Image (cartoon, rainbow, N blue to C red; front, top):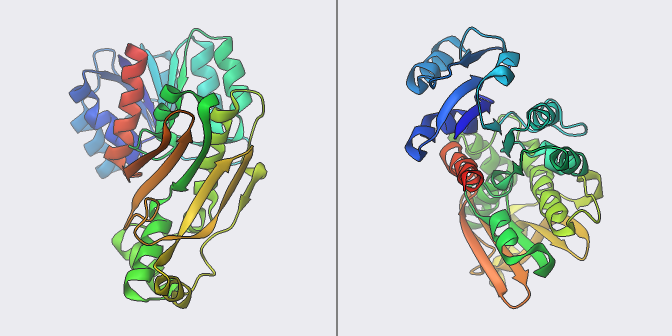
Length: 316
């Protein structure tokens, strides 16, 4: 497949770097200020080196990528709230040209799901977005394979930064601010970690799951989620939980037509108490019972692998 990749952050860059290993050709690549287009395939090493050294991927205008010869648009620009722009417009443009779309950007399917599906219905292109929930974890594809109508609940840990903070607080008896500073030093947390620690990122993923389960009957956005973060938790709270063989994790629960995110008591050795930056999700489904998925839920190469898996599904 010929790929047009939008976004030169960790995920977009990793897609460009790994595409050839999966048998695909990147014919266009853009960041917010520049682009490079080559019908024969861009030189990934040269382009990524240019991005690191010069801060741009090429000399062309970003809009030029839409005129490139490509089969799949990979939308890996940063997630934005509300109108989900510019990601939504990128999706709209590709579908209008009857191209496929693979999303790493959560915004379009968390904030404008019905609009995306309407555009898809009028296009010969297909939209896939497995990378938006759990990175490398096959959460949405598992729901797809089982059948959304057979899934009654999805719950678990879907943010590596928050999980790192909580697992470190529990293991070392440290307070939130101390561990957050450590996470920032290690690059686990952003300079502004609000999106992760206040539950917004987790809620967006929960909303996407809820939209998939609703199968078009109801549309969910971030405004429909009940969200509480971890900023007010203290080391003492985790110590008390440990006395009863429990711990605290930031849990998303999607069930009964609702999305809820907040700190929850869970078994310290249970399936939804992963350590470090790992994610862990349980899917309750008819006939299947409880399905558990655990692993790396973030990171450039990990999320890029989910993007390229979606590309493979389109190729089939």
